[in-house]
Length: 316
Image (tube, rainbow, N blue to C red):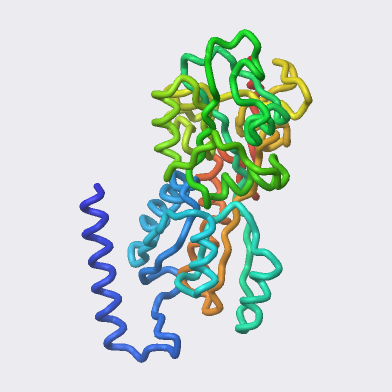
């Protein structure tokens, strides 16, 4: 399948080159349209599963369109947009006032389209017997106040906590620093790898580890209810209260993201700088359309516009 897709994409690139050679090029040298051509986009790597699924469906609907994704850190995705290296980035934050001013000073007026609500999942090794945690205890781990599992769970048989993120420049780390640590210095026990898959693999083989990843990496695509996670790791239930109990703790299920019960939720945005209303606009509009939102709904995330079917899932 991958070979076929690469062959098709190569054909699209050649076709675009031939067409542009026979047509008068616009001043900016770009020839893509709302539903045709080949463009690159950037996306935070933590959104890779859902972004790739959206691309596959979009390209199936529009055979003359090719979307080449670059799965990078959130910092790099925004920087590529700022440098005008591409015209669409998918991130977990909006543009800052300084970034917006940079665009405006060059007569660009980018758009920010919310496409979904995502959750950060806290995952542990299958041998870890503890399944509940409060945001306050997660803060203590982040900042190094709690260094051992016994500091949170006195009867825990495990040793030192190793907290693992995907990448030091990812949106996941930024969320943890800004929304949880509130700017406090992170513990020396915090490790940054490169990808969400590496975090899952590390936690799978390391009993003392806790990983922080985007929940769309854990959803079981074969479960139409959206109530199943990967069986490689435990997904912890998280509480906004000072003390986590079964009654006040929630897993990052779609319904709990929708109602705001799960405390580690974040938004996903399409950041768009495409004054020509060409293919970047076409793909961004698809993400926000009924078809694109239904893909997000099926993935276990909360779509920005599509109604959510709520299922009673409290099982702790």
